[in-house]
Amino acid sequence: MFAYVIRRIIQSFFVLMIVMLFTFSLPYFQTHGIVAPAYTVLGTKATPYNVAVWAKQHGMDATYFHRFWTYATQVLFHFNLGRSYKENSSVWGIISLYVPRTIWLAAVSLILTTIIAIPLGIYQASRRNTVGDYTATGVAFVLYAMPNFLLAMLLLDAFSFHWPHLPNSPPQGVQAWAIFTDPVGFILPVAALTMLSVAGLSRYMRGTVLEVLVQDYVRTAKAKGCSGSRTLFKHAFRNALGPIIVLLGLSIPALLGGALIIESVFNYEGLGIQTVFAATNLDLPTVLGITLLVAILTLLGNLLADVALGLVNPRIRIEGNSR
Amino acid sequence: MTDLTERERERVALLEPADTPITLNADEQIVPMWKQRVRIFVHNKLAIASVLFLLITVGSCFLVPLFHPTNQTNQALTFGLPWNQAPSWHHWLGTDSSGFDELGRIFFGGEYSLTLGFFAGFITIVVGTTYGMISGFAGGVTDTIMMRIIDAFLSIPYLFLLITLISIFNRSTVFLICIIGFTLWWGNARIIRGDALLIRNLEYSQAATAMGARKWHIIRHHVFPNSISNIVTVATFSIADAILFLSALGFLGLGIQAPPTDWGTMLQAGTSQIQNGFWWEIYPLALIFILVVVSINYIGDALRDCFEVRLLER
Image (cartoon, rainbow over all chains, first blue to last red; front, side, top):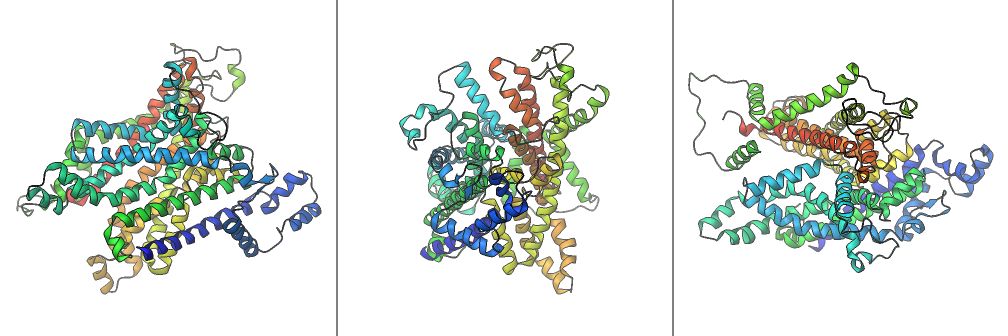
């Protein structure tokens, strides 16, 4: 188990290096290359000489690899995500207040998704080809085909306008714990995000459980006289748990992407709104910083999922290198 | 949904060993494989309905404006006209908040959304297949590195990646096609690579290798034909995904820039009018949009069944 976790961590680290290489290299493709911020700071009519001086002052004349080394060490050891020249502030300074808000939104939705999607998948697989199964599949199909914002907007219209029982926006302000102290405002955004990720997952969830249900050991369990529920939970569910955890881990990027849309619809100040604002403001360092941050969050989530997978799957726990 | 029943039942039944071996009588004719595939597809009523719906939608998006042109670009022409008109004989689906004919605008936006989705999906599948094949076939260190690169890009939530790229490059339609097409293939490459890896190690590929076949020959004659089912399926899903992501960009105001429009931008405009009760600006388009994506996804599912070898020769 320990060797397995260490191996996963090293692997994630390499993946993180590739992500950093990507976010580091992108500014070279701007209109003016990496010295583009110089034109923001010095004005559009800056002379080439002034731009060159500015670039030298900010260490932009160094070689590519030297700059990447600085960038990587800054990110890894100082958690410095870069500097926004438009806002004249560090990227972390701009977004730090909003990070917990997005994380809580996504985490609560992920927990709810788990609570809803797993039983739903088991129900659909064990009662397959019944009315309930068809209804769930149909609803998931439609929800999956719906643009995220449309679902959120329709929910908003229904529950906050036509039957005005719920607030149309979570409380403003940046308290990280607002989702627990004032939950009413969060019902709609969390519900929308949860519905989306359940719809995305349920297609796979049903298949995963179904695949386990047709295995020989399930038939054997039935043959030796195991009751239906005991077969389902003792034999099938335990074996389906591994793939389910993998699925949940893989759904994290979609969840964070969905959070971006949901935040914009419900005007919930979080990372998503900051990204869109920075993108429309052409503030590239902030966009890149946030992208790197959400990638790190995703990698951490996947790492957690892998550890959980190790915990439930004895093959991985004992051998350490079965995958 | 009745066809779904049958399909699922077949699938589950197929996972269990067959009771009787398949025998071929002397008077039975061997049906060519592609005919069997078409037969399976035609047998699926919902898939045929999806194809018909898509054909009608695509056809009307591109053909109706030729016969019944509506003004969709010049706001000066709509100035002074009552905006947000309810549906009438003159404007079948009313007019939107800029005074443009809503039905004509659905066709107009559809041209962009569907074209973009199709081309982006096409790029996706070409790049993804090539990458996956190379990675699966190279094996070893090359494969590991190529897959870690995919892991890296998959760990960036896709919308964030799109927004990053859009804030660097411009937002013309061609660039949007390229940006979506060249970034939506990570998952596809992984699936294709899995196929390539699997087929490469099967007996017939090994036999071909033993007989002195070159790698390129094996890819062309064994790996590609056998992974075509996944390639086709994944391609259809990619088109649907591309349309969905384009709509999300449209909602955020980062999509196709006016005067052209796309369904996402239109839905966004419609949802901002929803509380005024202008239902015609959102629900017809929302219905068409959802049906288009559902159809594409359903066709993907049906195609997967067509290529399912175990369903052939029933």
